[in-house]
Image 1 (cartoon, helix red, strand yellow):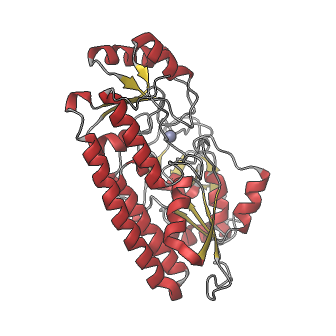
Image 2 (spheres, helix red, strand yellow):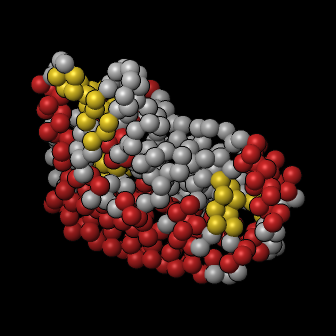
Amino acid sequence: MRESKSTRLYAPHGPAANSLTRENVLLDQSAVQITGEFVICQGRAGFRKSRLTSGASLLVKPAGLAKLAGWLTVMSLAGCSDAPGRTSVTPGSDSSSKIAVLATTGMIADAARIVGGEQVEVTALMGPGVDPHLYQPTARDQGRLKGAQLIFYNGLHLEGRMVEVFESLAAKKRVVAVSKDLRDDQLLAWQTSAGMHDPHIWFDVKLWQQVVRTMATTYEEFDPPHSADFRRRAQAYLAELDDLDRYCRDRAGELPARQRVLITSHDAFHYFGRAYGFDVVGIQGISTESESGLRALTDAVDLIRARHIKAIFPETSVPRAAIERVAKDSGAVLGAELYSDALGAADGPAGTYAGMIRTNIDHIADALQGADSLRGQ
Ligand SMILES: [Zn+2]
């Protein structure tokens, strides 16, 4: 398992300070997840926590919460940090006390509610249309994070601007990356960042089932008296997700292989493409941080023409300018918006994870076939 690995990083030769960046080291993904953008540096003064942009000779801590304690102990010897402690509250031990759970994305919050049932009170940090790559917690969020007993986040650097927050909270409470039990060989590479993985795991329903199992196990450990309840709800939800996965395969199967090309605003759909047999092109990269270059736009236009692609898709959580430009230049129809990194409105068809996945595959299969339900804009 990735979390049990110890990874050694070597800084490049040269200036001791400010020479280490994400580009010139092979970065261990789980280290980023657990420690944020920090590394443990061994310097003359002993162990020291540093940002990735500083330090020369570096050891990255063995990632994973189980080992976090040991490393923070080393750090506290050097006066850097407090050792982590479990909350003294015994949550959910009677029917009146629910576990206060905070989830970052709507997809995670949905699973957390379903599996947690009446034992939990779940709050989602990011609402409909919110882009997790760029999300920074507000003052109100800080209060929510502080008040939560258990925090679920995606990890794999999806919540790129929150890793420091999770790191500091992990010293005080249970903070779980729901992607933590996925094996490296189940994950796709983040093509522009060596050693990192594509975080959009929810688009392969089979991978999301693993996430649901991880959440169930976390609840069981957190609140052992209700283990059987968590297990039972997880089993029922996993069966529902089996049906959802089958539905996606059936709808994808309506399209001949040559028509299975999915062009969207950003690179969110590679897991979807691998699972359901689509070639996937995102006009922006995996994170929405960088804007699409001119080259990416013209490449997309060329591809649309070469493969006679009927429709391309904007996303609800990404600005539409680039994809609209490609549609205009290529003559492809702009299909209905896909839900990529956030759920839709709570009372709408994409207000749940299953609803989001079903809505997307319907939009995709309908539009690429040129069906009547296509809402060209
Ligand atoms: Zn994304």
